[in-house]
Amino acid sequence: MQITSRFTIAVHIVTCIDYFKEEQKVTSEFLAGSVGANPVIIRTVISRLKAAGIVITSQGSSGASLAKPLDQITFYDIYKALDCIDETGLFHFHENPNASCPVGRNIHAAMDEKLAEIQTSMEAQMKQITLADVVSDTRNRILAEV
Image (cartoon, rainbow, N blue to C red; front, side, top):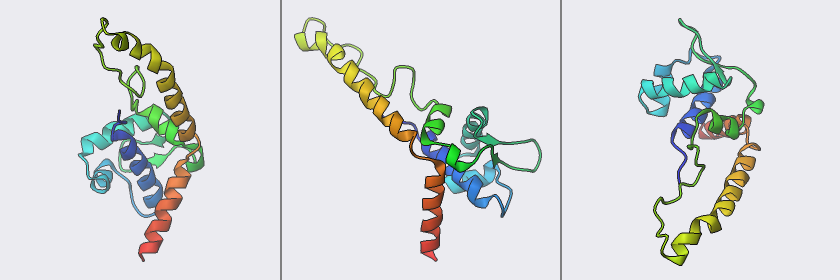
């Protein structure tokens, strides 16, 4: 079980866009330097954030900006925008439990509802955390460094 690193990259991107919005143009190359990732990966993540209505980009030299206020962007919004998990859900069940074993025959049914509850709970918590929370914490940490 693991949500892809695209999730944390996306949160990093949104935080950078907000933090540097008054100082400089926030381009994929600039973001790649901050994230420590290839600009192609950054452009892919930005494309998904744009499709989800989280960021705005335009051709030319304007760079990226936020499409809505930080307090209206949740971890869940980022998670859904990036398709961080596949259609099977957060947990990938092992594919070949032994049907001739009583445990193998029943383990999937015994776990499915419990795993779905865990995912639902996690997603509900993600809906409570906004990017405003992350940006505020990041700014406080930057100020503490000074």
